[in-house]
Length: 537
Image (cartoon, rainbow, N blue to C red; front, side, top):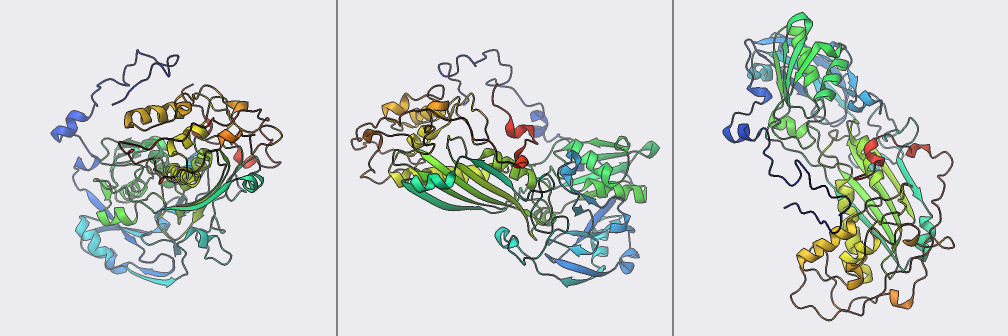
């Protein structure tokens, strides 16, 4: 249940809310519970044709020859679609906002770069006829070396996956091979830390597995226009991408969305619409192109695999004085949306914590895997998982309560973020205090009294003479616990042993102005407003 705390947010609380906290019924709920919600595939048309795609059985191979002569004469076949039939074969979704190069073909020409890459399409009177014709196509391949690991892909001599990015890394602003963040001097801080924690985290690719697979139906209309019924989550992205690939004005396309039978980010890419439109243009008939479950799992974009290394320098009193992050996003063979996920990841480092010395490098890497895309917070979800695991490990390493460890290091209003933006409207401390209260988690008094609205800015980290270590009194250092350290997700035992004497929080002293960005480090300039925006104000 959503709960507002007037005592915490009294000057920001609006009691005249129309939706938040109100029992509002979804507009489409009645259709869902009665089974009458319309999906793209519920539309029926006379003389409907079906498009099916021949896909590569190899992760990386050169196409020597394609023989589709027998398939073209098969019963029910109306048209074979080859790469040469696609007006603009290369595309990337984010090219619509001038971000990245057009690198992915709608149909492969000379080389396939992942297992499942589309090569050729068959348009037939039924799905069965199309599939039977596909079985008659003969393709000759020369297998090529493949690479499936992000760090292996960056080593000298690794197979080059994507010709638009021959070094296997996405190029930011036309010249930078990764996103870079520098704040303070992390290496100097590590030399002064009482504990250094260096860990590796891995998230594997995840398929969205929607109940409704990707698909669309393109229907010829009057005056050269086409109506497209689609399951997309990004209606205007799909419309503009389809117009670009088909080299036609966007006003010749009428896209009709509707109920999406599960998306979670997996229907943001434009997967079926361009080719269903092309097939309708070439045949003059309505054409349906929908993924089978096998195609959805193999060709539909997953959340990409992510590998994250985190190194923390921690003082015995609980302050994190340095954090170094090195992260790799597996984009698969083409760009799709992984390059944006990297921007989001870099913008989220070092998490909601004030750390005076931060060093981060985040790479978008090409491998011979299925191209990756969006999925529920992509670019941040895996990083949050890694950062919070790291926080638990850091608290355990110095014998500190993991919730108090977070409260001590949490942003306060006025703190300077590693991105050189002032923290405003912070609330992690208050959220942690309320969570502790509801879970009956024992916090020491000084941590119950802490607030996001005070002791921030210059008071929260070390002074100008030493950014990495604030002068700490002997009482500020807490000895390791004599009992096994609890982790954050465990409920406290009903009877806990006596706590050690409360340690005073670290003294606050002056904080210098944020260091100037190194010369030439213009690649950190904001491109997406969601990255550098402020919250609630």
